[in-house]
Length: 142
Image 1: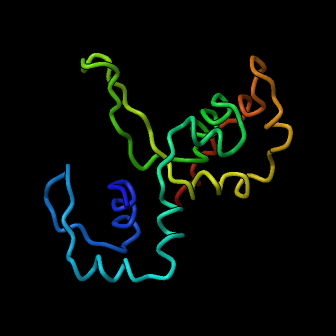
Image 2: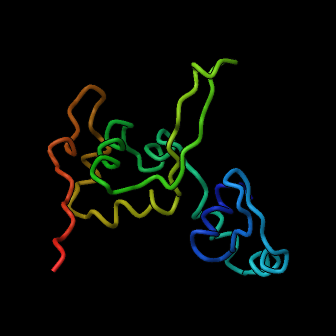
Image 3: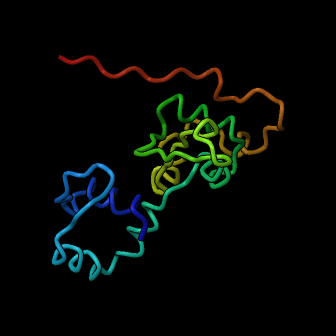
């Protein structure tokens, strides 16, 4: 199980982080054992498996540009990013957003207004049908 998945388990309330260290976690062994005994553990881990933007786009069967529009529209959010270094210099480091498999898988069902079959066939170099969409504004508080 990756640290990303453990952090998602903390977010879900399945584990409590006992550490004050932002770079690490500490969990009560009894709580970890309880989570490990869950019959649905494999499904939970699969749902919280991290995907980079390229992997998320591939999983949805769309181009990376289309996935970028989904992020812009707020249809999928990244709970965490990781620094990826190219070479040995920090000058080549970039932050890469990670998305949960469950949040990526939920996008088509949450947006039936999109013609997913058409979106998946848009050719490289063509404008995304999602480009014209605007993010929904939050409802006004009463």
